[in-house]
Figure (cartoon, rainbow, N blue to C red):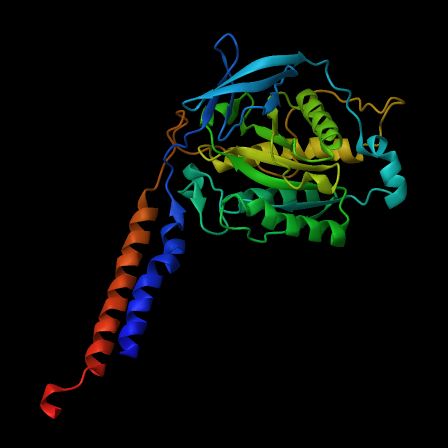
Length: 368
């Protein structure tokens, strides 16, 4: 009887245990992302999730606020036309803080709150249960930063599953990095969940993916992080036009209260080829290296830069393979098939074992 009870317990527990196998890989079916329209009906933004009250800054420094949601459409109104932000170097922006901590160490920390995020055309899936393609992007970012003689600590701690508690788990990682490493800046590396066309760039010289900067409005130190984000955004627009898609101001906190130079970067979208994201990384590194460590700064804290072509930095620019048609990446649909096949095999083994145990424990009629 005890063996039969054990068998039944295993059968009931099995579906819970097997959730990991089922969610191991998700195919590249389109997300239900939001298209954001202005008062004229023009598309001005895309984002995988939005809330009323979110706002964003476009490349022409227009600030919009989302006022209405309807069937995965969002409607935004122009709040303000900003003047071009003054580009301020960190060591001038935070002189007081730096005087307390000492000189910049040329150290940056990287981590990933959503470790599962992947790129369907290159990885075969948009998400995996574990370390997805976003880890490749973070490693490439680390490599390029190191070519600028910047020490980089990449923490690949897993914060799965990808749910509302992921940021609470990654906060522990971020706090540990801050206390142990005392970095000049810390970046949470993500990818977005919108159309390929919103991030794809072909400027005649090369193809690359745009990058979105995300700042959390719930952060009590929002103003400082936002000022740093604006400086990065403005400098990036000068050095490499079209590198940044926008600054998105969401209602989360994104662990950015830990220090003023903590930002979230959305490195492309799940529908774009990962090599195109690699192509944008040397440009991002140039911007970060300049904003954090530039020595040529005028009396007002401005950095004088000239518009540049993408720097080599020893990194080869990849030629994307396959179709460039919008939203038509090569997709592998096998993830769910293999997960379900594995599920049935495991269930079959459990049932066979249970029957065997049951029969073995059942009294023999002949011996009664």
